Amino acid sequence: MTKDKETRNMGWNFDNSYSRLPQSFFSSHNPIPVRSPKMVILNHPLAAALGLKEEPLESDEGVEVLAGNRIPGGAFPLAQAYAGHQFGHFTMLGDGRAVLIGEQITPSGERFDIQLKGPGRTPYSRGGDGRAALGPMLREYIISEAMHALGIPTTRSLAVVTTGEIVYRETELPGAILTRVAASHLRVGTFQYVANWGTVEDVRTLADYALKRHFPEVEHDENRFLSLLKQVIKRQASLITKWQLVGFIHGVMNTDNMTVSGETIDYGPCAFMDSYDPATVFSSIDRQGRYAYGNQPPIGVWNLARFAETLLPLLHENQDQAIELAQDALSQFTDLYKRNWLAGMRGKLGIFNEEEGDESLFEDLLSVMQKNRADFTNTFRALTLGKPEDTVLSDDQAFAQWLKRWQERRGRQQEPEASSYELMRSSNPSVIPRNHRVEEALEAAVKREDYSVVERLLEVLAKPYAYDPEKADYCQLPEASARPYRTFCGT
Image 1: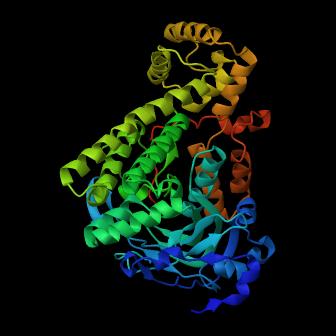
Image 2: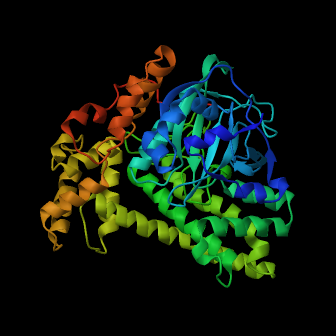
Image 3: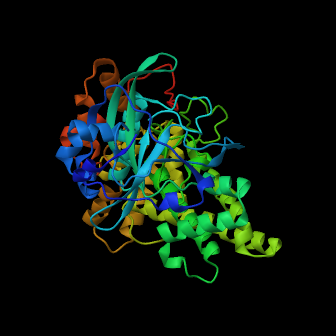
């Protein structure tokens, strides 16, 4: 397959810095062409931000690019090598069903990875077919764009195209390819791969690359690799806090699914919590609850410890001192997370200043919510609307006592009540990707080729903090079911 120079009129402007790293970090690899690609959905605002021209991108030639049938001029397709702890067990991995086409340089000078997900087997496929089904690709599109609208760092989705081919899982499913956009695909698992199968100099090369690409402000620090570790810890503490504050459950927090950039990546068995319960798990493969909602912060620390281990030879020539430096840096995660969480909860409850008893105020609300199986999002939505009586908590005496404490707490700040509610509106989403709404949209698309349900859902999720009455249907809970909701990786 040759590179197509004519595709430059689509706005592609590639550089390929990752391809200039040691060749052991990746394998040059072209996507495997598909039979008859067809555009399902294109992210027009994202395309414009990337400097891409929408009309050429939606043409037959543009769809051929998004399907991997044509390689844009200036691209350097490759599959990245990485490793990872999957449910605590270390293994060699790599892009088994993804190909990095290149790094798009936007009109503003930003750099983003453009990756095709589902374009066929790669050297890292390990027996898999390298393909993807339509449902999981649309799911990633929906959830990643919802996360972006919520203000949570995330990879994004540029497009989904169907392939005209069938993929075989438990049943026959329509094939599809997702175009994923990321600040980079550097993972904790990338560092684990290089540390285990490369040299110390290889790790140094990768660390310097990560610094230059994501943390240029600290790349000239006296101990730049310690600064790298601290920056990644800081970003992950911020990211995981944001997950917790909206009830998002990633579902598969393996080390290969933790980015150095601090973006959420890999929307496999993820979902949003309905009834508040820290033990909530949706993933069908997480039978022990390792990645339950309440475990996400400690798992974040565990993953970061694995990252720190790869950097030990760079932190200090004396191993004991290197370990001490790493442990000191890792110990900051808990304080960073707690400060972020307290600040976030203050926003969700319209509190501007700090008081010593705030943490117990917040924890007591969550406790009564858990006892009553109150919906996480709708409870804060009702409080934001000044209608606590609309929650299942209204008959609970403990909640009545809590409301009184909350009102007294807000009364001890200088800001008026109107400002408090305005803060709550900007902190509490009115709508989230309700699991039953996502499934409804996917079923319409996969079974009936009706994409209008997906499009309407995306339209609603694009403005999650807008309290519009016409969005009320998207705030409704699913009908009661004897079977718990389960998600699957979709690989």
